[in-house]
Image (cartoon, rainbow, N blue to C red; front, side, top):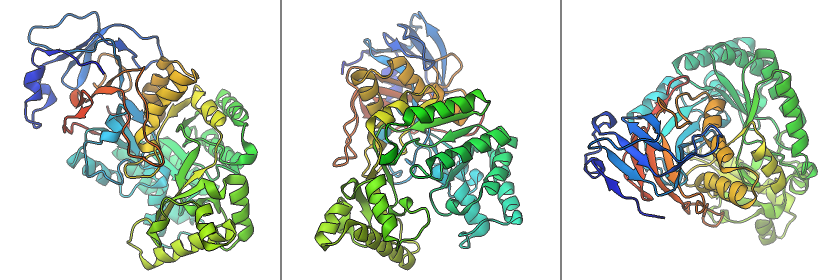
Length: 510
C-alpha cells in the first residue's frame, strides 16, 4: 500500500492525547482519492474536507492555511461500512480497537440481533456510551429479551394476552428511548414458541413507534416458504418495514431457487410491502446443533437423518464450541461418528443430549455448543447478494471459528466485484453503506455528503482481500489503509490508533 504524505497539522493532532475532542482539532482535507460516495453513483476524483465529526465539503478543494492534508494517491475513499447484522459486541469486546472490523473498513455495527438483546434499551445505550469503542454501535430490541422478561423460564408455550400486552409495553419504552425496532430469532428458544398473533401485536407496536422489524425467520430450510410468508404478512398488516436476516436457502433440495425467492420478494414490494434483506457471503452458517430440529425432539433419529441428508452433511457440521468435551471443537460430526463407530445421526443426537445436560448442570456456564453448518450453494448466495434490495452483513463476531467476523466485507469486494463482476464497485459500496443505513434506520451516515458524519474508509480496490478461513478465522483482511470514525482516525496506514470515538446511535439520530 502506498504511503501517504501528511502535512499541516496532522502530525500535531496525531500527537494529541486521546481526550482531545474532534471539535478541538483542525479540519482535514483528504485529497487525491477516487471517491465512491455510497449512493451507487460513479466514482469521482474529488477532495473531501472533514471538520470536527462531519463532512463539510466535497469537490475541487484547495487546502486551507494550517489544515491537515491526507494525500490518498488514488486509493478509493468510501463511507465507513455498516454491518447491519453483527454480534461483534460479544466475544472479545474487551479490545475496543475492534481491529478485525477496522481492517475491513467497518465503522458501525448493529446488534440486538436474532432476538438476543440482553437488557432494556436505555441500559444498553448507557453501557456502550460509558465505554465506547473505535466503532459506532446501534441496537434493536430483542424479542427473546421481551419473552425472558415477561415469561421467564415458563417460555415453552404461547403467551397470554396479558403477557403480550406486557411485552408491548416494554417494546414501546425501548422504541421511545431510540431502539431501531424489533428483532426476532424464530428458530431459537424462546422465540420459536411464539405464535403469529404475538408477533403481529409486537409488529403493530413497532410500527406505531417508528421502528423496523428484522427477523431470523422460523425456517431457513424445510418450512422456508411459510416462514417468509409470515414475515411478509407482518409487513402487509402493519406497514412496518420488514427485513429478512441473513437470507439463505439452507436446504439442498432448494438449491438453485434463489431467483424464484427474489421474484416473490419483488412481487411483495410491488404490492406495497416494505421488505428487504441482508446477506453474508458464505455458504455456511454458524448456529447451534439444535437449530435443525424445529420440533425440539432430540431423540428423533429420523429427524437427525433428514438433517444430515437434506439440510447439510455429517462432514459439513463442524463443531466450533463444545463445552462437554472441548477436544471436539474443530471436529465434524463425521469425525466424531467415526471415532465412536456409529451412525452419524446417532452421534448428532448424542452430541445434543450431552450439551443439553451440560447446560442444565451449568446454568451460568456460558455457551455449551456451537456448530458451523455448510448448507447453501454459492450461486444462490451470489444471487441474494446481487438483489438490489439486499445489503451486506457479517452475522459475525470476534473469537468465533466462522471467518465472517473478520472477512465478510473484504470478501464482498474481492469475490463479487473483482473476481465475479456480479457488482460494480459503486454498487457494492452502496450495499455496505447507504443501503445498510436505510434498511436499519440510521440517519446522517452512509454517504460522503456535506453534513453527514465523517465515518470514512480509504482502501485499495485492487488489493482489498479477506484472509480469514475456518482454519484461521481471526486472520485480518488486507487492503484498507485508513479509517475515520466521527472524524477521528482509528486506523492509520493499516494500524489502529487506539482512539475510541465510536458512539451509540439511536433511531433517527446520527
